[in-house]
Length: 164
Image 1 (cartoon, helix red, strand yellow):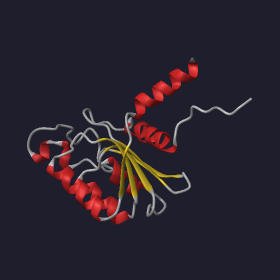
Image 2 (image 1 turned 60 degrees about the horizontal axis):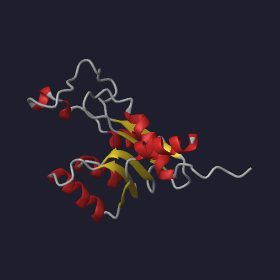
Image 3 (image 1 turned 90 degrees about the vertical axis):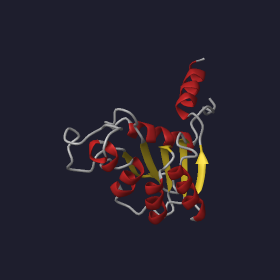
């Protein structure tokens, strides 16, 4: 018997982990997940967008519109930063897998932490000033940016092909 050929690549596998992490987010509009992986394909940390530890999901707003204190934006910790902060090991030299391209604030943390590569799926804010700032900083710092296409659909197709 020969080995199975139709397997996930490492990038597909770890993006799947980022998507799984996103399912922990209680944000009613945008669920983002992240996974940090070292050069030996070991998971160093995971994270998702949510409120800081000790801040109840019931006591802070999830709204997207209104005054600063009436929306989630002043309170939510993004998936990338959560993954960096959750790590018990250094993340320098690691790869970050994230379902949504990092904002400018997360880009700063990514650069400062020493992460060397970002694999992302969605870039829905492409062209927005904060997205442009993020890309500018990441490129200046030498962080490799790799866009991966439609991993959820790809995984479904691989499963269907396996059944055929």
